[in-house]
Image 1 (cartoon, rainbow, N blue to C red):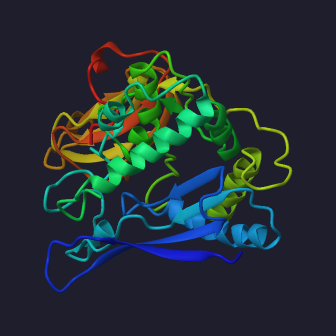
Image 2: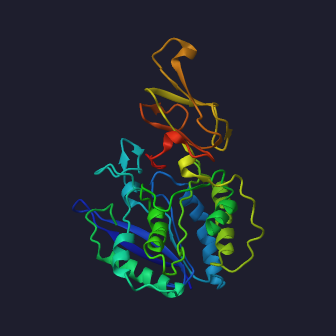
Image 3: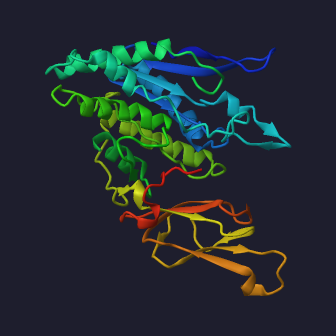
Length: 348
């Protein structure tokens, strides 16, 4: 089958305008296994979109050869609201300007409503349970009325290995931030806990891949990302083929509660000593927040140091303006950190 295009229309907040999400389907609608991939939920982060740009021609080729076993849905730019956020000659795209809510937070948790409808209907047949849960979840979802334009380890380990991830983190089954991937995966964990006597496997693997920084985009990187994604898709049996040997994971998976998040203690501009991917030791200097109005040289610098051993995987651009409370960097560490207890791993 040729690629099929379909559009999801969004409700709009202003007269005379419209918003829609453009989707592409490869393989057969409704077939299993199903893979859904979206990019740029933070609309100013394009590395994922670049990877899909290079992946889609390969999916067209696989589809033409009859190699796709199930259904693959691709949404290259999933956030038309954020795509339109051009302010002062700058593209924003991370927060909804009306509510100032992060686009990847507080997605709807369907588990409570689904569980209420499934009472005494689940049994020992896992396959039948999966079908019933999916049907019920879709029914609950269809009944929801969006009030604005905003509200509409096996495979995970292999994905991290195939992508060559520098850091891999896992969250609790019920992430408090309610990210898009979090609520999709948590549905099954919540129902399994609610109905312990029923056979409810984890029928949906969902994750978020952070593909470098928002400006770190090139054809070479996109081609490499696409090749790695395709190997993983083949490894999952969604496309026929030989994925080759599974690469070794570059670093062990770590708990998100072991992530060291550094905040700016004062205003200034930030300069880093390390680049993403660097192995960091506790107490090592990661960056300086510099007071530009101080004439005292080194004394004008407030050095921010790592509070754990791990891998530096996120930071801001050198020279960025810093203000008190701004997140400066993130380090993936193996040990749960006492000072992070009770805090969300996704706090910006």
